[in-house]
Length: 160
Image (cartoon, rainbow, N blue to C red; front, top):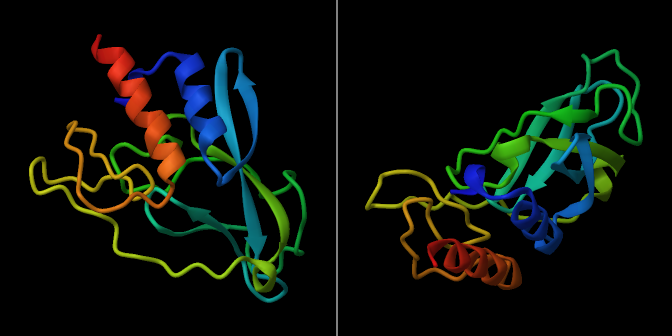
């Protein structure tokens, strides 16, 4: 389980994740991923971040419709609890930090998918890893094969 990984293995997993643009330590010895976020702009009040594990956009508040659009990690961006529904999303362990890099109109076009469901343990599992927290490897192709390979290596090392 990702929550039980040593910090070095967790950092290795985050380093392989293409959605992670930086890794910082919010508390000593606890790596926390930084994800690119996009601001909905004036008249709206959302920051959006792509989650490769849920295969969807997570939406976080910006501080209300009157809050000015922003950039960077300050203000209403910064440290957030992950909205992930997948049991084995690495983001659930430490949350993530939002770094607003532009308006939503500049965000890459990504089509949200239905979050994969494990019929064995009856939980959602990471689309990026194609593996469930119950240990079952699923047949669909991972969204990020290189990340899935690192995850499989880490799990194999833990089982020895």
